[in-house]
Amino acid sequence: MQKEIDRNVNQKYTGSDPITWVEQYADYLYGFAMSRLRDEDVAKDLVQDTFLAALQRLGQFEGNSHEKTWLTAILKNKIADFYRKQLSGTLKVTDAENEQNVFFDAETGHWNEHFKPKAFGLETHDPLILKELGKILNACLAKLPSLWFSVFAMKHMDDLESEHICAELKLSSPNFWVIMHRTKLNLRNCLEKNWN
View 1 (tube, rainbow, N blue to C red):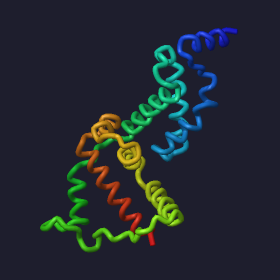
View 2 (spheres, helix red, strand yellow):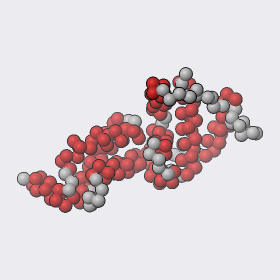
View 3 (cartoon, rainbow, N blue to C red):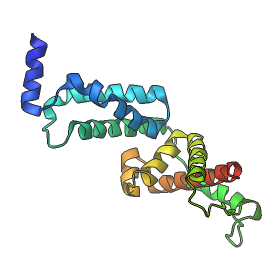
View 4 (cartoon, rainbow, N blue to C red):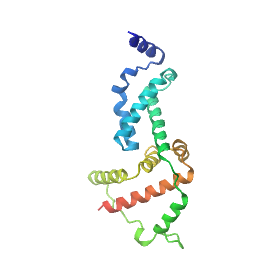
């Protein structure tokens, strides 16, 4: 009886019905988390944490946005918190500079011959070829460390500004650019190895 009263009160003031959240939003939130984490257990845990946090903050939900938007925002914060906890040490810019010595000639700044980008040979827009390239790209993305993948996804899939990503993940600007640089080099190398 008390649960029914609480449920009616919540619906009356927020238009929100927490009892239906799992059925309505769990799959979407899980997919969202997986696209940024790629770890099933962590994604499931963060979705559960999202529902719990939303339930605890239900009184603060004013209904100015859709429930799905509100829950997604909570999940984004949970994902950012997860990555902040993962960052025990920080990346050093000098590491990237040393890494560049392998890829680039120190005197000229040009690519070393062995690492010079190669033509992809993708002059066609054949759906089958593009589908195959997509599979290879996804396999390459799956090999990236989780933080690198998340930074790359936020920048190039979600089209977020660099400053926003740094703020969300508590990264310094140099660390962000080191991650982007390493990610792009890794993706390029992986695609060159596996394409053609």
